[in-house]
View (cartoon, rainbow, N blue to C red):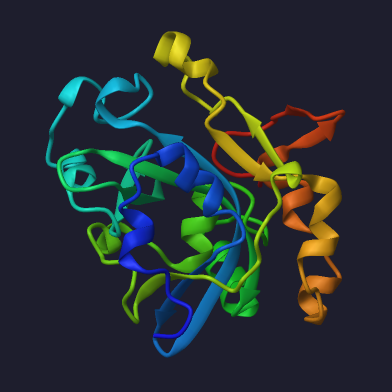
Amino acid sequence: MKNVLPDEFYLQADVVKVARQLLGKVLVTHQNGIRTSGIITETEAYAGETDRASHAFGGRRTARTETMYMKGGVAYVYLCYGLHCLFNVVTNKAEIPHAVLIRGIEPVDGIEEMNRRLALKKMKPGGNGPAKVSAALGIDLNHDKATLNSTVIRIEDHAKNIAKKNIMAAPRIGVDYAGDDAQLPYRFYIQAQYACLLFDRVNPAVRASTPLSMTAAGLSVTEGMTQDDSSLHNK
């Protein structure tokens, strides 16, 4: 399929690098003949067995985390708080449980359908927050272990390369239990001031709204620093 990321992309050894490189890529799902997609605007890297914030820290293997030990290029979808399905990209070679959480997207295709799905879960339109990413794109536990080059779910490269100066780094959200690892700058998002230059906002439904990367996960940006007001989604 045209523009689909190659397998080699997911097999890179540096999960932090992959998390940055995923910014600007397009996450796509197809359901019932409807294409929905969004440009990835926010990610978090989880470095496996040595990362206290990772589900696989210390070599933990359960029915849920077994997906993380698969060869890179599959989806790791898990249920958070018993309510929200969160979508992750498994990276690196098999038996190295690296993953990247997709925290935010800028909706592109199928916006009406995405908004309908969000409304069913009593969420406002948009892709700001990992719970809303999955809800908008129709991602659920059935997508766990799915290969990311299929007609059902995939990540495409539309040549929206983000310069390093336009990428912000910050600690991950909701991982206070991880000790010193909670402060690692493994969360990446597109600088707010760059958003309007990056996104081609010709769709009236998109043009009328604020670029989500300007408010992704409740972020406000001041002099290169970030403040975060939410963990899963903004209602």
